[in-house]
Image (cartoon, rainbow, N blue to C red; front, side, top):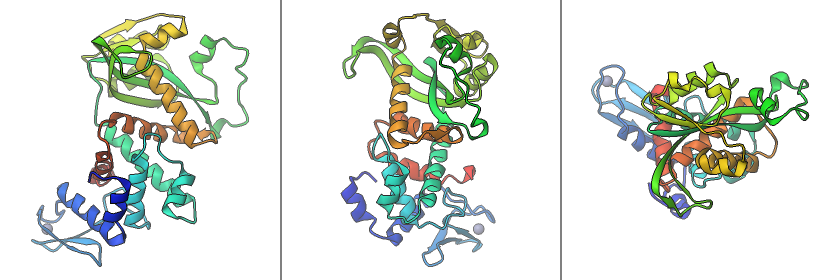
Length: 320
Ligand SMILES: [Zn+2]
């Protein structure tokens, strides 16, 4: 499904065309009968169910997908996936509510968060390799658990704040593949001689050595070279990766060049999150918003095939 928005609207004008699209995608992703392991099905539109041609056992189109237990129409789901993936910045829940013509905000909010969770699960299938930049980002958020006990960090030095972060800020570990190339990449401002690959952003409870190492171990190949600054949380990274390079550069403009991709992705993620969610985000949901940002970043060359990939991921029955 490679198409602009006009063609998309023409191809999926109603509920039936959207349902049929999900049906075809689900069949193409390899549906298997739980009774006899058969792979041939007929589909009954009225019942929205597949029937096994061998034993007649049925499977509902929504069961085992992100749409399971949802009363929303197939059209709402398909259009939501299209609108979420069609721009880098994404759309706010309010905007989506307007685009989909919903009276209520909540169902749209839930649908979008379910899709962000799918994006995270899909990206969790990858691990980062080769050369990686690692750093922490601090995102403005509220924490309903500790509300009213916000610490005043204004008198603390940058380093002190960083050790534990402010209670208003969500701590995020950012890991990004960044490989040195012989010639600076002229596509970007502040030309860098590093090419960017896959990106991961993970919400952290804290930034201790143990937490950082455990997160790196899960998300990064053992045979990786990791570059970080001198923060003590990275002191034992070599226990979980091949090589750890530490670059200590107090001058911020210089360090931005040494770590071009963590710096750039953190600042872009902050812009996107702030742009779409003017009210500060509850810490509980930050990971979901980061999932969406990373999912799109990691598929930045997919153009509009990204919608198709999200549809396939949302039908992956092993996740629900
Ligand atoms: Zn069967």
